[in-house]
Amino acid sequence: MTQDYRITLLPGDGIGPEIMAVTVDILNAIAPRYNLHFTFQEALIGGAAIDAVGNPLPTETLETCRKSDAVLLAAIGGYKWDSLPRELRPETGLLGLRAGLELFANLRPAQILPQLIDASSLKREVVEGVDIMVVRELTGGIYFGQPKGIFTTEAGEKRGVNTMAYRESEIDRIGRVAFETAQKRDRRLCSVDKANVLEVSQLWRDRMIALSAEYPDVELTHLYVDNAAMQLVRSPKQFDTIVTGNLFGDILSDIAAMLTGSIGMLPSASLGASGPGVFEPVHGSAPDIAGQDKANPLAQVLSAAMLLRYGLNQPDPASQIEAAVLQVLEAGYRTTDIQSPGTTVLGCQAMGQALLNALDAAA
Ligand code: IPM
Ligand code: MG
Image (cartoon, rainbow, N blue to C red; front, side):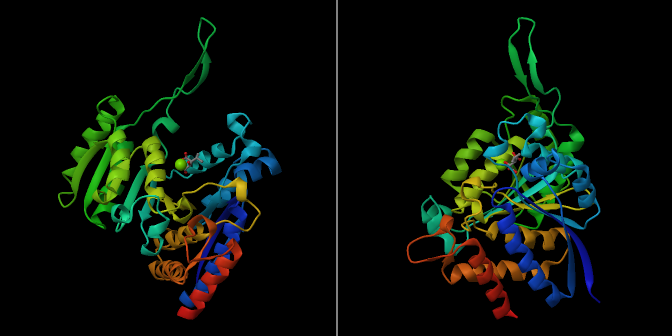
């Protein structure tokens, strides 16, 4: 019997529509082999939604997402909308989607593929074998804490305020996801905070230590965020699973991503306690190369693999997509962002075709 899934597509801005088109072709190609059928529904988000209906996250978009089994998002944002007031910025749409679907856990894997070692800006011996999972808290911390805003003091001076706050329950639920993630990996969890300065981090650390009693098979360590940033570029192999708050996770996941040579390779999964997850590349909308068929679609394609694995519990087609990605890299195909001497540079669409060929060859 064919299993039908409803998937909401949010192509968004910049290179989003191009990498989404490639990915949908791949999902359609793989579906019949596993008796799956995808019903895709496209919805507006980010700058595209601002232009169409004046709101970066239209109500219909959130409803469509809620009614689906999983959401595949490409990227949002661009110069065009950068000067709009905050409530009309594309980023506000993305944050609203995360909050609206209560996607508190963001999984960002950074794995060095042997084929791409030379694309890394770090030495081969430093990055070879790196395999890190950053578990970032996504709906709390300074991104959402109150009070926030730009206020005027009694003396008439403007004062910008954001608040980094975490409740115990918020720390515990991301902590559990992180410990369980570590259990499926190398059972080493590093919690990153700034407990030497911030009270919110002290509570974070206290809760992680308390939780660790429930996971005696996982080794818990702690690093201050500044040291963690340094260690990530100094000797990244020491890390297995990292758990951290929203802002630190935003920053550290970009560093971890870049170890692999290109942020254009990395997928992510944002999950809640129940309901559909959102799967999206870690990279942004790259407006500078949008519409030129230069984008690297691989992070988007790998996000679709994460959607299958974590969102729909379909690990087999997920593995097949991941294998196809490795195969095209092995064959020497690259987009410009990951090219190195002796490789064949392809555009976005041609890379998509190469992936389809690899899937056909495997059938
Ligand atoms: C990310 C991005 C977003 C974030 C922006 C676009 C709001 O940088 O997903 O890492 O800061 O979370
Ligand atoms: Mg970021």
